Image 1 (cartoon, one colour):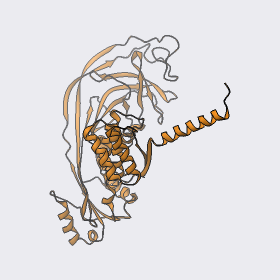
Image 2 (cartoon, one colour):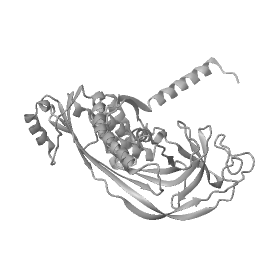
Image 3 (cartoon, one colour):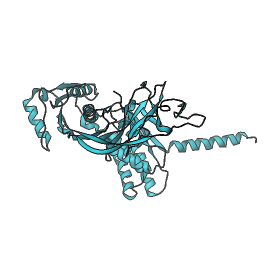
Image 4 (cartoon, helix red, strand yellow):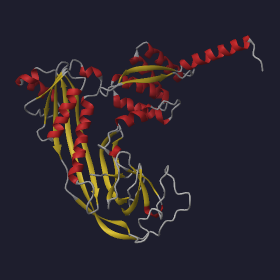
Length: 430
């Protein structure tokens, strides 16, 4: 079919109109991401910190080094004595401290970190484990019972899986509970306001059942303790990289649609508070309006109300009218993880004959007798999506088979009856 010059002109005009309409569907906004309102940090350049002497010396050094690198503070000095704030009105304490301390008087901000170890004693609980018995002739021959890794596939011919002999044995599951409490109070003496006054509590549990588990109570306690301190640093130095967000128009003529679009126009004029009022009014009558939730989330994040924004993005995700899912990206970025777990080898899949494949990108797994398998479960606060604790449970024992990687074959030797081995279980190697 031949097109005339006139037809091309009409098509070009239609494309231009279509492109223009699409460009008005959203407005992109760029701003530095904060997890605390930025005005709280005004003129807070020299920071004096008082750390509880009960804190581990390595963690004290971590706090000092991290804050010295924080762009919000020009200078960080450590006070000779700890700063112990008590009561519900810490401002009075800081005002009194400034009168008797030259270092506090010369600083724009004062930070108090008070620490408590409330870990509990061991607990024993009876359980049962399933033991996979050795098979003299067939147990460790690669041609019998073990699939070829390839690209997470199996042998092209039918797999010969030996008969698995199982035996139950009684075990005692030992539970160690590590609980650390840290109160951080940050005072801005220039503005006369308390920037932060929060108590961070992490109560985590370690469950071991084997005779020689890979991770012991002392090592686990150090991991939990560090997690608490890193949570505090997350709040004390809240500046993050700039982010680009979109606020969306609806182009609908109903009252809710008009208010949402009016809010976008107001935001373009830098009248964000009035825009937020428009979007909030929509949510009063329509609590499930994801356009309003999303746009309001952008406003709150821009203001530094990070966790309030995260909740708005979560609500927007429940019924998204567009493909902008900010919630998952933020949660993945800020959800704390146990130190190093992302680098530990993990079970990739379990196959016949009690065989499994371990994915290990950074470690070569030698042939060793037994390694503990652990399952990690985060305890998450639903209000702010932060981890408040974790349960680390030994669920089984495996024996690895030497290979080239990144997938290493392994034989499951034993597992807890209530926790059979599954994808994602960790090999915590020393």
